Image 1 (tube, one colour):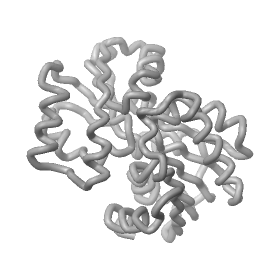
Image 2 (tube, one colour):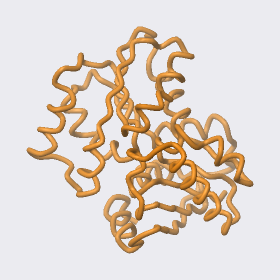
Image 3 (cartoon, helix red, strand yellow):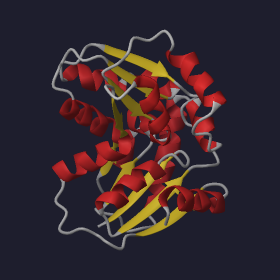
Length: 247
């Protein structure tokens, strides 16, 4: 199978990493809209327009599926993308909700949802989780994490100060949904901050879990090929992919 992976920037590479680990696809076409990142501060109509443009880009390839790695796009524009596409379009929000359900047996668990301003404002995760009878929910927009990851700042004083800024007044959660594809790159430091008792749930693992549940994959793909495209500075995207994915 051939899959397209769409993200507002480089964060969707964390989803690609999970796809490679589980060897689901023969070919991956990655498109990052790096010229217009971040999406999390943009209005709904703009997000939808950019998302449909991504669908038009992917029509240059004969894809079996499109994965929307961007949580903001998944929250605001998934239906419009599905209507515009000629193949299935899968978003990470639904996958993240289902992964949370599978990870937590206690419906009273304290769940912290992290994301961009737009994702948190959409309440997409809250709606999905409440439908599954989870009601002890906290949501926190953490937009500063995105530029920190873009600058490859994965630890140190600046990041620690940012963690303290966002979380010092929050009760300790049982689970944290990393509702932005950039955030898994902070998984180690977030894990240390919240402690080993707190489960971290992120888009890459969630989407793999969802795909294996909903689709049939004939065999493991041991030599997946990847093509990288970006709306600006594709060479920088390829260098980041080489560093993060070791491919």
